[in-house]
Image (tube, rainbow, N blue to C red; front, side, top):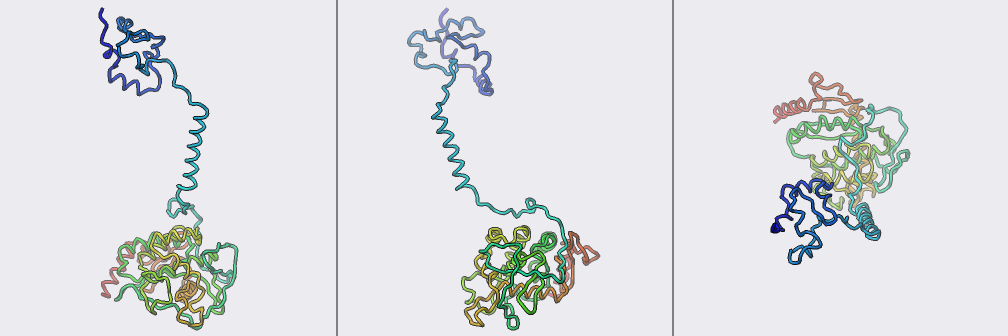
Length: 383
């Protein structure tokens, strides 16, 4: 019988090749290729010149099909394996030291550790004080200290241009920066409402703390860190916009941070209130919402508005002065609980111990839609 065409015999059907590649285990047919014998269902194939004794010119002398040998691929030497492991270890080490992202503090509501809901009503008779110092220093939560040199009689916060003119409706939230109720109040009521009425209200964040009329002592319910957080939020809302590197060059009246930025910064801070006053956390929130961190730091670190005795080149913003003014305002209004929301100079709703209390409109005032409707109605009446 004349020999069959070699190339046709050597080329398996395309479909069977696909099936062979689909499994790493050799099939019985493949395992039968041994000692120079190719078994197949056609008996005539056993005589084909596919072995080492094939005549020259068959085209197979110098080319051996990898699937027609039983020899396993050579195992890499120990030196080769060592090099491979070294490359992998070096890559992982470089990734860890150089390429990994900087450690950040999570600010998402889903990844923050849950905390026990506690009442944030101001307590009377507390003796603790806040040490207000530069954010470059690390805060010791157990430390209490006094700051001196505050000129109470002559001090008053710098005048600022209010955003917009006309008959905007006063909307105010009295909070403590490390209070869980403040976070809930801002995220469940204030922010959803402000998305619709920000152009119709004059919104302000005020803070609840105890101040002394005879000294510079400031008492914050949740410790010195909360006093720093309060000052940071006040400074962010009152920084000049656009930012300046020299506060002494500012006019007596100047435009301040847009509400969309200061309120976004406040939301970021309160969302991770347990991290206040961590420097990296504050820096992250400031960068995210377009707040000048250096100016923020200068304001929060300044202990009064007139350290040079009235000279024109003195700093114009003081976190301490802003905090004292804000705390005195809350106290004069009889506000003791964080968070208390006031609309048009009247209490609208209170968030206390994880619950809404004393809400207007038959206890429906905690619904942002109800607050929006009330603001729109007042706006239409006055404009």
